[in-house]
Image: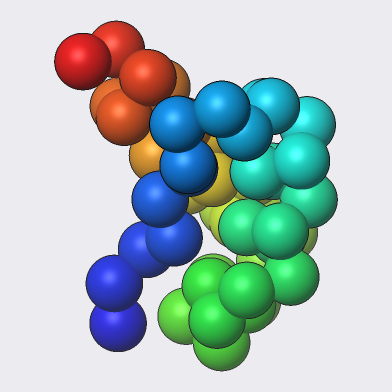
Length: 48
């Protein structure tokens, strides 16, 4: 399942909140793992 991607003007806090509630919860049941996945997705997209 694809990971959520932050929108152009979306703030980090808003994205992380949505990401933690998204379909990622089914793939990553451990909260710490989910946080790492969401943060890495944020950094990867915003780095470009």
